[in-house]
Length: 343
Image (cartoon, rainbow, N blue to C red; front, side):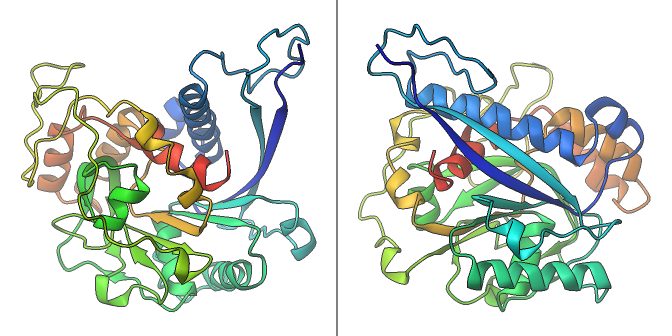
């Protein structure tokens, strides 16, 4: 029997900052964090698509003796990085044509700053969306804000202040459809700026909100006709636990004020999170205000490094109380990213 087909995605990540101190020592730089996020989420995603097949996405020479004629394709990806922040490295128009997707990362900078590298990034973002429709564009935190600015929206300082650490996001009706019927997700956050709801760019649709920031993510479809109608009865994925005690540290409870109790385990990926892949393939641009690529090991030293300097003490304390909350970055948001990319 034939071995599984090996399919490939070519990605670029536009690095808009760098790590430092303990965060860098323990986690590496931005590119290292994104490589892990993409590989871990691809492994998780493909395992759900074909639970009986071991994911071999890292293997260079897979066995040709696979007798499973029903095996799903094995996916691999390459990731080119561009330091747009310091080196002002940007992909050429010719090189852009090689990519299936581009990720714009977070940054300590503000998306509304009138500085050379940010202005160049805004111009590139606009050009990609308007002239390179083959490329799926993914924006994370600062990248979410840059996309909004580039496509007619606006990023401003949030009068509600900083949003830091694991945060519950209530999904819109469309967000529930995009995220396979989930009502809420939990992501790491680290931002003072935001895109107000009333300054969301034209043709973009909101995915979720928090108490402090009403625009927690957006999508743009290739065609407005592809936007699904509101769900009559939104499907939901049943939670596997309702306890708010964290399994990694039972002494720490999920106590963030919210309209729902945060689960302490990521919702298991089920068919509900992959059966909407045809809808997700119609998405051209996908953004989140949070950081799906981050986890507690990244955020804790970052909060401590910024405590009392840029992050107020009380906000840092609250983030540390929630530090072991569930994280839906890899298994949920990462899966959505890969589905949008056509995996």
